Each structure stands twice: as C-alpha cells, then as structure tokens.
Image (cartoon, rainbow, N blue to C red; front, side):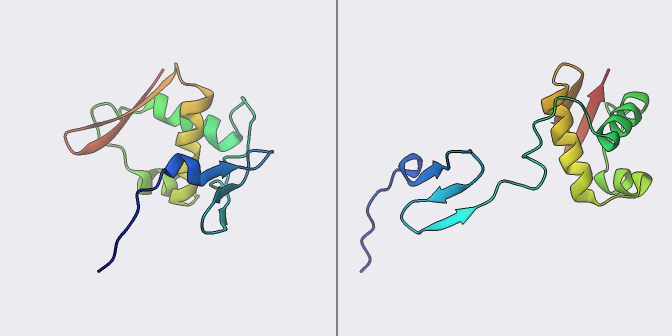
Amino acid sequence: MTISTQRNAVDEWSHSPDGQVLHLAHTGKSMQPPKGSQNTSTEPSDLEARLFEWIRQSDFETVAWSTAKAAKAFKVTKDEIYEAVAALTKKMPKRIQVYYSDGNLHIAAE
C-alpha cells in the first residue's frame, strides 16, 4: 500500500535570482524557460513584424488559423511561429487577439 502526502506545488518551485532557472525543490531538477522567452525587447523581431502584418491583412477571424501554413509561408518551423505569436501577444497586447472558437484557433490583428 502506497501512502502519499499532500504537497504544495508553490513551495516546491523556486526561481533563481536572475529569474531564468526554475527549480523543483524536492527533486533537485532544474528547467530552463522556453527558448526565446528570455528576450525582453518590447520591439517585435523581423519575423514577428512580418507575421503581424500578414495576420493583420488576412482574415483569420473567420478562417481558421494554420500554424503549419504560416510556417511554410515564412519558411520557418512551426515552433518559431508559435514563439512569434506568443511574443506578439506580449509585445502588442492591444493589437492582437488569439482565441479558440468552434474547434479552431483564430487570430485577429489591427
């Protein structure tokens, strides 16, 4: 018979002084934040700016968003598109909206 004790996840995770490394206290394991998340620039990168303009000129409010098609159009990986969209929601929060509707992801930009 296995008896488990309740644990407080907040107490188990901690940040390093520079905020870059997460540490799970009871295991000694460390994790790095996702690639690209260290970029603190408020200006969009070249890819982000081009992607924003493409989204703004497209109709992804009524037509479902396709990360694979975006990656192919920009000749980058799907991960780079996901990172760029995530960055845009942080850098331009009042100009881009990502939402889920009718089983599809939609993105609106102005």
